[in-house]
Image 1: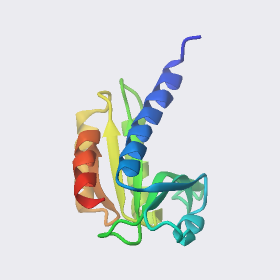
Image 2: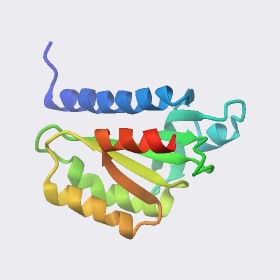
Image 3: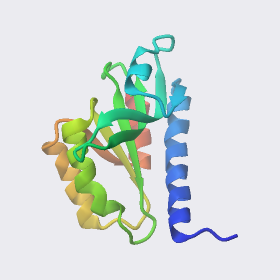
Image 4: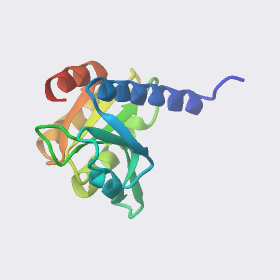
Length: 158
């Protein structure tokens, strides 16, 4: 059975997340959970280099539950941890229209510095440029990387 456009988009997004997870594992990070709370991850002191996926971090700007793609603990330069969000858009769609919402949540509700990893060729150039400019104004947004630039960053900082 053929996937719908939304199904293909979700599958491609999972592939981007899988690549980020492979990078984390290659640098000695271990997954301690999936769909766990931020408190569980931060208190799981058995592993110095750890991460969890789909971590509940609290409420967002609309007072709804926020989950982040990855919450990583154990970076030497950022001992409080870093959040990694993955955004994929293969063809024209709405992911880049969600950037302002994501940016406001990062600024107001995220408990740790955040990196956004983007991929695909469907995002509008203006949207990517706008999101990258937010790094100057949003104290919690560290950087917006393509996958290859994220690999280079991880090689230096993980």
